[in-house]
Image 1: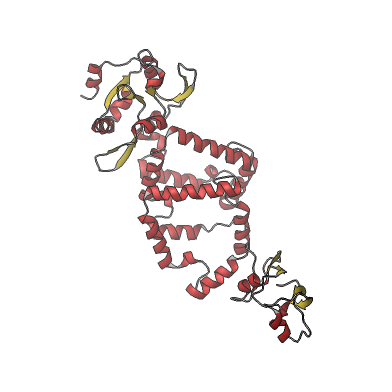
Image 2: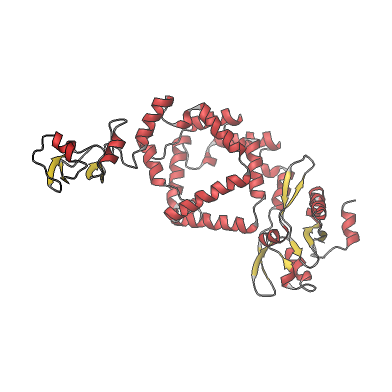
Length: 407
């Protein structure tokens, strides 16, 4: 909508005839006259005051720009409301409001992404993060308020979520109600996390904590009283109790799932799960290098380093995943099913071009197949490989004792 009623213009050789034909008499070049807006040529760059026909936001722009934006649908929209005209165009061309609702285009987009290499996807992701960082100061920026406003406009609820539609989409794409139930999804997620270094994991965790502190004022969202109250309210609404575990139906469903997966009502009654929990119970611990620098290690790596530093200089040992990768590159190996896996060595000795793999006797015996595949991959790359196996008494096993473990 045009707010300006009239504008003062200067007569010049290029507009002399136009205004003369509109019955402005006795015009002279250089003369300034006031004319109504509709008398101004549509291609004129003279500035006028307008407002968005959707949100009423005022703005000053050239008359020609206004006409270009107005002519297709006889409506002017600001930058924020341009999606309104995009919907009209999509309805005109495809019969739907959103381009993603067109099956052929959806498939074309999917095929395009499937054809991209991991490196190309990473480049796109990095570029997106850089743009967000430059524009908003945060590479992971999400306009939460805009998302809420859109949901409020479309569904009358800023927190709207359509679980049935989500299930329908997942069933169509993966044959399961939830993406996390898909074996393809599980494998992709496992590979993604498996290939991350300790430094990358630390960085992700630090960003998560920073985001939670900014949003909730706590390191974990579950520590927020607002989140706790919201969970209680939702659970009470859906199940009639404040805690989901207080619901007999949910408990019964959990037991049913556990019996189906593990053969017992409680996963902790399954010996494999118990062993897995024991294996993952090792926590990262601080280790002080001879230089005084403190790094994170796990398992028996601290014992191995104590012994190695008696024979090697600190500068001769690489311990951090990124440092090792920068020196020797990435190490990959194939499992017995042909699946690709990345191997992250524990320690690398530069002067000897040697990988040191630190293990407990329990882990060495349990994972001997994959451990030997990793060893062979390193040897194939021209590196030496040595095991440092420690027993429960924190004693390093001799080579002959290690051989007995696999008999």
